[in-house]
Image (cartoon, rainbow, N blue to C red; front, top):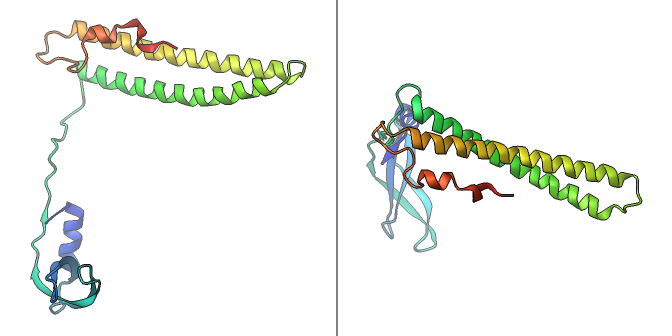
Length: 181
């Protein structure tokens, strides 16, 4: 059994993990008990016989701190990797902002539809809708700028030995139909 470093320290300090086994069906469960206590016997629910039966401690478990399978980054990102990272963040934020503005625009459009043209508030509703469209266009311009940066970077960065984009070619980023509203 593998635990994180924090859980490992907590378990090692006061408790020990043990395996309990049902005396009826040999169903096993893992529980913690105090380190100084005697062997554990408990009355627990056994899912196989659907009743409570006695579980006895059969063994203690060794607890090892798990090592992370991922490599930790050493230092800050620099060069093309930093530009790509910053650009991805900008593109994500612009997309989220566009989605938020879009939802506000749906409400503004409903307000325009339900307000009669003769009403004084109709002009205000139309202006609000116009501001929403302008805000959406600004976010699309930010997204297009990100795409242009990706395209330029993929064309310029040919000396690093690794491709900047593996899944899409730089021609896909240059596609004018990518961000059409």
